[in-house]
Length: 213
Image 1 (cartoon, rainbow, N blue to C red):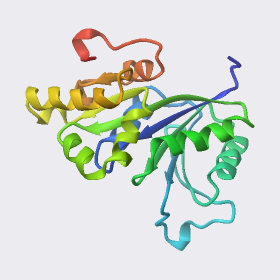
Image 2 (image 1 turned 180 degrees about the horizontal axis):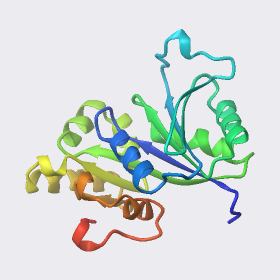
Image 3 (image 1 turned 90 degrees about the vertical axis):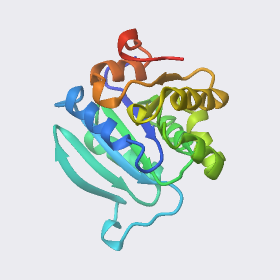
């Protein structure tokens, strides 16, 4: 792999599942000082006020820990290309909000990757263990799609549910994805570096710090 290639990681999950907490953890513990761009994007219906509608379709929100945080509006592909060409980042973290399908997000990224020196590195789904059953019932395909297309599934709120409920959640996830690595250790107990290595498939978390079913 060429060293200058930009890695793209996609983090999906319903509102409140813990996506932002996970991303902040990775930025603080592993990616601090690296050239990382965080992209927050509304797939599907765009509910953003007029102030965000910049000419280039990119709003720079903040810069901290060497991370550039952008919101993309309008043509996702064109905006993503502009971010890559402007910043030349080592890594891009994409946090799609709303109830967009992970498959749609990955397809959009792969379309851009065909033209640029970028690599779709990983797809992560953050699933609230206390709500997975309800979400599967109420949201069907939109929720299930995030599970189906993820390479790593991180179950959040696992310390808030009974062992039986957690086991049921893992079973439900497995029904829709037999191959993904499932992390059940509470997020606060996880080491950011180990999580990133697991997401990238380079390693698995130590058995005493995670449960993979």
